[in-house]
View (cartoon, rainbow, N blue to C red):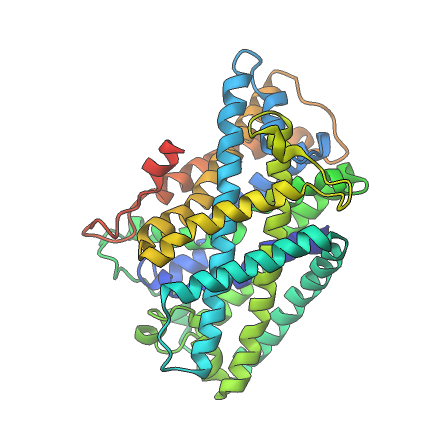
Length: 438
């Protein structure tokens, strides 16, 4: 479960995916110093949810915890809101990770075939291929998934060592001033404070979705002990690896004007370091493998949340059926996949803005989900309704919960800002109205 948790977050690989975007808002200094804003907040978030998972390890996770911790007079409405936010956030997150895997795949092809023009239908078909194959694995070969995730956890660490070694020894370097002090406001936001905060949003993408492990609680031995430790320590480890990789990638970023516009900047960085198409391709195949394992884990986690949400009556009970042959909720495996396949048709129509909004909802939605659960936990703690657990925050509980709430609210505020000005129809951040619609 710890290997699943660290490989599922795959923080340094996730940050490398969209690394070039930081030069539009904030620049390198936002990526470096932003860690000291994001990581303390995320640690308080995960510590709070880890305690909840120790009290009640259950597939419904956030909405179940909300039901037990919310003020009794309001728990029905709060739980209803929480459940739908959490479920749609996981649909959005599955959209995001499979889209990332498809984009890395097309980037890998582009390294060998620079003249190849990527079309929307290419990305769509690659997404469909991953969803169908990995969905079938969840259905027919679920017994092998823990071993796949275990190997992915090992590969996640080994690849970090390989990338650090290759880049630090072979890649051209920027100056230390560039890495730690360089700002950038190419997006049109001229205010340093606004630009910095919009820049650190990129870091959050590598540290959201840590509740994935909690949704597999009912299939985990000694879950009250294993689950909170896996969740918390996976964030600690990923934060360390990601910070080291961010520093290294900034030193080795190469030509800013070229790489910031690349669909997958890490590919060009590896190409510049190795001087070889074959060498760069082999290196990129590593993060692609990790991202495929993330899609596999996302389907497993989303399916268990879907199963729990239908078991409790929100979705039709049809999806709560557990196949006696496969011994998994097969219908709940394929429902999120079908929804994502339908949403991904936006790629085919050219509605990249609309599909991008669906993807961005994952972070905003999960931050709301964490906020609601932690707020209910803090209320229960202050009214002495919290149950004792093997993994407990003890006397630090109030402070940790309160800081997690402040951090979640602060980042959620910036998540709905448009990234570029002047704001246009295609560049508008529609996350807030669509979130309200959901």
